[in-house]
Image 1 (tube, rainbow, N blue to C red):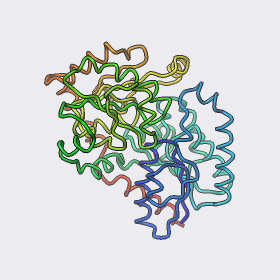
Image 2: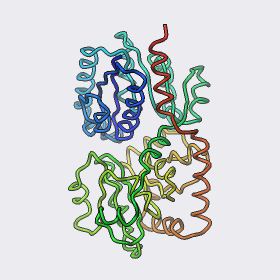
Image 3: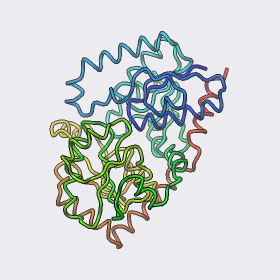
Image 4: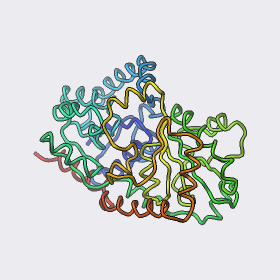
Length: 373
């Protein structure tokens, strides 16, 4: 069968790549084409547009890049019709993918959605569109089944694929080997995860590195995104001695004492590896004010959302200051109740997310649904 997959971000590329591998194991005739990144390409997909050219964050940024976004829609529609797959698989990225769901469905192409848009946070009215244009929805958060059930829409939940990803990549090199290969000293590590988009990194990294003078006994190390060249980070760091480790986030976290993490999938990855973290977020002021009126969630991190309580501290917008970061980070680095509470919460999180093998179970269901008469 022919699978067209659209993933517009680094996390989508990761999960789509594992889905492709699982689909290939269950469908020997599988052919893949789509939008994504290097990981999808390594699993055999023909990538017609890389996600690094699609990452626009915030309301104002989207408006500013509207001509480019409209061109992307047109290009994708033409490419989809020309290739005409057996199924279009959409991976998160709702602003783009919900429009493509409607387009595909109206042109007789079956639509699967893998990793639901966060409709439980805002714009729940979009459920009507999903029910109309999406044949099957595959969710990765346990509470999403209940959310969709309120709208009389049956979805599939079979665990979170990050459990598999982390398990597969956790052949961690010895600390001495990792430090030597990365050019790091023997000081304990504070990992910095500023995000995967340029706009996001520019906003977050400057304040993260500003805590460095308060932690002379530690080395700050940046987890560089694979799609961002090291020179980009160096421009922001202005010649400091802070190191950047590209495409080795899991290894870095495995040897870190704590982490500063930009809100997103990385908060969940950090939790599953077991590293105490401070979740950080600061966006465009106007975009944030608009979002605050529209978004209805108690927490910004996936860790706290899934557990429905505070497991990891969150510093958002005006609360994200150097003084606050230093204070909270100090409490997590010290052996004591704050650090212990985070680590205990992580154990609860793992239980809620289900067992390993999520990608394989979803792939099996997809093939089943596609071959059913």
